[in-house]
Image 1 (cartoon, rainbow, N blue to C red):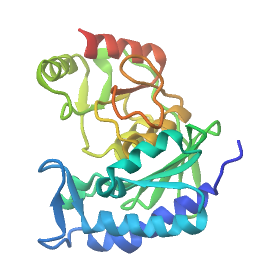
Image 2 (image 1 turned 30 degrees about the horizontal axis):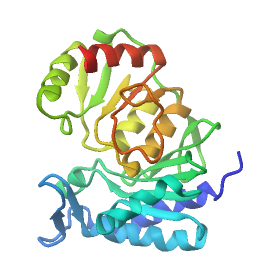
Image 3 (image 1 turned 180 degrees about the vertical axis):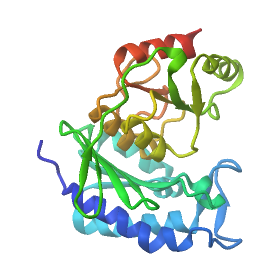
Length: 274
């Protein structure tokens, strides 16, 4: 597939933004550098905003025809998100995924970007500033861990496992009421479940073959487009809770990521439906 931009340039841009705007502020945020958005745990920092400005400016040179959608841009202009469904070419960016961790001094955060072309996600990048490497996927070309020295390792999801041996990532934070109680109770059926409060690292962990599933109820494109493409290119199966395909403009319907379709169906039945 011929992509509308050079993915390596976008990957380099994320690294440069992290080195210029994110890492210098890690564990050095001042009292006025962190603010709450929708709730006390939904945070934005000076680093988020500065990194997004850095990436946006770079995109004006790399991909001037692309619709640029950043998490903080949408926070300032909510109508921007609605333009994604009709955009022929878009770059979607999360300048710091895991802002709560970043603001708390926890070294588990990432910088993510995805490329949407003619209604489908065609490239996804997750950069880890602490490890200084990327997980990158292009549609139809596999998923890779890439390092600045050019080394690349192809990624593959874990082998399927029975539900009582599954290890996974799930957060009940955006389930509510009876559904939340049911999901939390049903998660006791798996061997171990965790939440890093950082989709970037959860998708990297899944694509690297270290866990068997990931589950999310809140869908924003900057959180999931890159990771789901990477998961699929590493051999995983991805769909919304009702079994339908996850598309770039979807913001609801839940998301379940599993090692294969059979495991996906088992998890939906045992965790979401019972």
